[in-house]
Length: 156
Ligand SMILES: [Zn+2]
Ligand SMILES: [Zn+2]
Image (cartoon, rainbow, N blue to C red; front, side, top):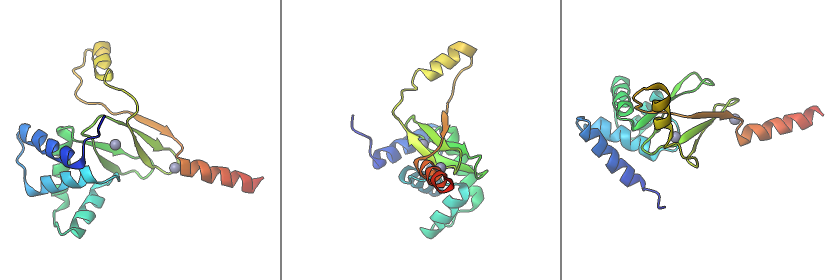
């Protein structure tokens, strides 16, 4: 199956925003485009700094407001990292899950598992009307595994 391109994702996200009744203001378009394009999991501060470097002087309040709207429209997922205590943002136009390293906090996207039955199952089990879901799997990233293995040999 062909992966949708970034341009497709961005255009589709703009339609979602508009259909939810949100005006396509310049900050909303810029922040959305930034999140669709990045493979990082930026914090609001990082978004602020990066956009400033690109010549966009948006206040942190504007960025937080925009992120709220994008979250409400389920275009963006907030990931709270226990490692750095910060909230990270991820474009979430396509269902996928995350694996987070319990040691260094590195986050990875994974989309090789079908969660499409999860909302139905959750609704059947609880009677809740399911709006969204997120799945976080925890483990040790390859870098930390390597580092731990090295530390181990040094001790021996
Ligand atoms: Zn790690
Ligand atoms: Zn993700």
